[in-house]
Amino acid sequence: MVVTALQETPLAAVHRNLGARMVDFAGWNMPVQYKSIIQEHTAVRTKVGVFDVSHMGEFLVSGEDAHDFVQLMIANDLNRLSQPNMALYTQFVNEEGGTVDDLIVYRRENDFLLVVNASNMLKDWNWLQSYAGRFKALKLKNISDETALLALQGPKAVQLLSDLVGKELSGLPSFSYSQEKAGGIDISFGRTGYTGEDGFEIFCASGDAEELWKLIMEGGEKYGIEPCGLGARDTLRLEAGLPLYGHELDDETSPLEAGLGWSVKLEKGEFVGSVKLKALKEKGLPKQCVCLKSEGKALPRQGYEIYSEGKKVGAVTSGSQGIHVGYPIAFAFVPPALAKEGTALEVKIRDSMVVAHVVRRPWYKRAK
Image (tube, rainbow, N blue to C red):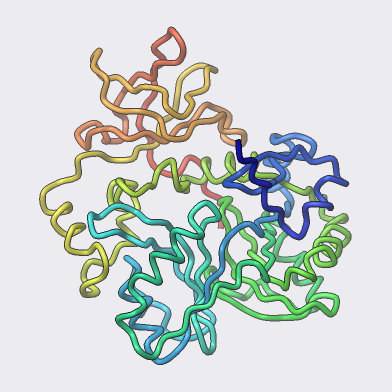
């Protein structure tokens, strides 16, 4: 029997000292919670929370062919990043129209920064390498090991980071990118996140991660900051109607089926997977991701079967108590004919059939 040691982020010792409950996530030893998921979720919705997401992957793409290469590899239109210091949500799509991964692309002054999911890091790197040979003036660099990433999220996040860099950041647009110093530490950050709240995802050198975490925690004390684990990250993203790879997205599921058609730009020209996606759109989708509001208190969980008029029609991909909205919620795939808002379905929860209605995505949307 081969026992493989879990990878750890530069903040692993910090998490243990804070009493975090650590779990195996995609081969990484990560904090799932500190005090409680409910407390951490609520802190992000009402004040501010900080997450260690240093397990995510970061790739740099540079050279004269960098733009054309990235444009070929993603479903969104890279030309929307009309100048440096802008960011874009998108997907890698395989030749069959399935999703290799979802990611954020940052256009910087001299290169593109791609931030990918930890569980897909090696797969994504190999995927990019398999197409890179078509381009002569191209350089790919995996900087994941040397990069730490912290997510500062919540209504007080902008003020807190403004305090730390000594500069007002409220004027930065959503999905923009900037570089500053915080307590002498070089940081860069995007006004991005995975919680449905305002905030930033902050990059620094791995060796600076502990000091940056300390700065954020000390500076955030007056704002009621809480360290947050993967448990709250999952409940927050679900309430905000954001997909999770391996649940709403996978190699067999297209971004169109996952409800991400707004981020797929078929009109931009050919990209990897575009031929299949066009055909899929013309023919009609075989399944569609819907948001469900479940009746009662029983929680719909991943894998639970969905029924309509006594017939099994789909399954839950993610489910939880909607901590802020106050009722059970779930993502599920069903036939498009059953995806209309207001449609009544049933979720088989243990031995009971629980009514759940299709509702508009997302369940939670912050006030602007």
